[in-house]
Amino acid sequence: MSLTSSPLLEQLIEALRCLPGVGPKSAQRMALHLLERNRQGGRNLADVLAQAMEHIGRCDNCRNFTDSKLCQLCLNPKRDRGLICVVETPADILAIEGCGGFNGSYHVLMGHLSPIDGIGPEQIGVDHLLQRVSAGDVREVVLATGTTVEGEATAYFISERLKALGATVTRIAHGVPLGGDLEYIDGGTLAHALSGRQRVM
Image 1: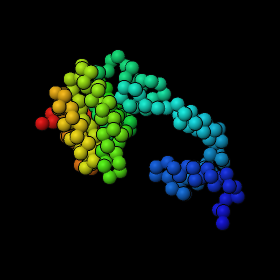
Image 2: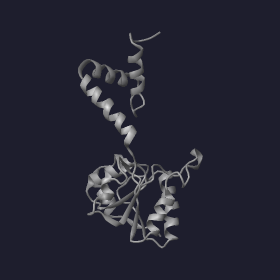
Image 3: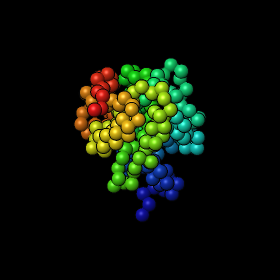
């Protein structure tokens, strides 16, 4: 039996449930709020969301989200292109940028190695990273993957491939708790982890 008087309302509630952490009740509150109090906000959300889904892709250089060929970070001439920070997700870039302690460039894996899920080096752009380093002018690669088992395995795999190229590889270590995701770490802790990075032996 339908809980609402409108099949379209039910579709809206169900669509909102695709967002992380949004269950049936939260989705219902969001849908009713937009319809009751903020229809213009709902129209704006729908318009911007449609444009984002259509036009946002990956940066040709670092694989971050962007609506152009190169993201704003890669286009910024003040960024240090000789220093590359490897992260798992665009959310990690936002976290690191928020702490203000890093002025290099990035490489976004869009995940981590997970053979059980069929995610190998090709899916996370390891070859693209190796090409960037092989092109020269890169003096250091900072591995800032998560400290989960998968994140550590990914960092180890990448470090071995980079060291074979003769690259200097460091790993953030201090202040990041075991099992923690970067996007949930505070700015001070992240700044300390970046400044205290260690060379991978």
